[in-house]
Length: 409
Image 1 (cartoon, rainbow, N blue to C red):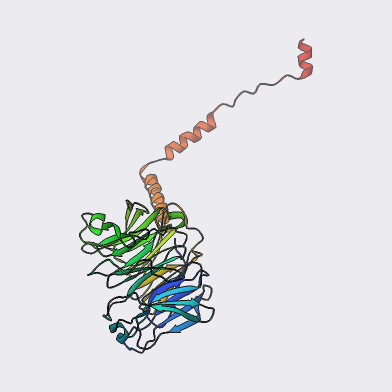
Image 2 (cartoon, helix red, strand yellow; image 1 turned 135 degrees about the vertical axis):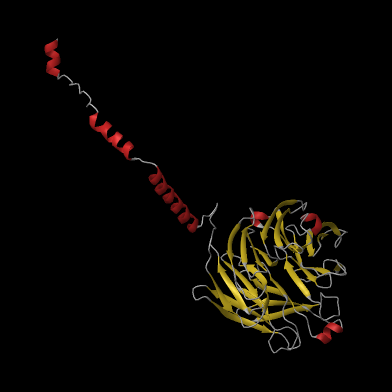
């Protein structure tokens, strides 16, 4: 199915986006800490589909020596957004990097509420790569490029574990998500998915691991890219993204949400997935691929619903679906957002391309012409006509009247 869409210029590279509960678009963008002159900021927009435009509502500019926002997530029901933004290089080296920033999203401004450290490293190249609210907003998880995970209670922002949870010493955390019951957290590194306990005495302990090599066999080297728990329609399952390295391609894998048993695996692209999202009702999966395309899949059947090719000029850095499920937005370092209008319901069943229908009609017409040229149907036609003209009419028997019947008696 084709969905209407348009490109909206932002003017600066976009690295992260999210939607507030009232469908307001938030983006994190900028030139980074390179002193390029491109400002680093958070911006909120209203999306005007009719005018094919983004209307800027509020902007928050970070200090000139600070980094660009590299990740963000909005609270599912409150006007709150949390973002990962490194402080100045000097503060990072001193171990004073208050990189996790929490803002209240007001009608015409962002109001900074809290800032604290989640990155343990003192190397300026490390940063907070991902942040995720639980589905009810009561917990928040972060993952960093130096291999640490933190889990906080909201709105207190107290740490759930005594200290940051070290997952890897040589790899970055690519994604995190918290299950519906807030008992477990899944974190993603390239070669494995780790299930972490969030309750009881064993808070912060890894209780289950799934390696990428055991997920798709005989396909060479593959790397995990993302994991999200289902919600609503799909609360019983989870979804992982796996990219092929030696053999290019990308897979969506559906897991049981509790046992992490693999339920279904589908190859969805010939190129790697670079950004991934699930709708708030759990019905849709959206992702951007390295060939600059946007794809939308049904989360239950893993059936492709729509594809938009050449959505951006550079790699797609982030993607999201509005809470009302009417809009999809992707963004890129090419300084643009792509806005896609989604239908209330996608058609079910197999959709036939009109060109295929036309081609089939032409084939049928061609076969009919060929049959008339090789089979002489004229004698058959004359035979049928002669039979109709020589057939004796049926004898009609008269029905006697009442008076005739009386005379007979």
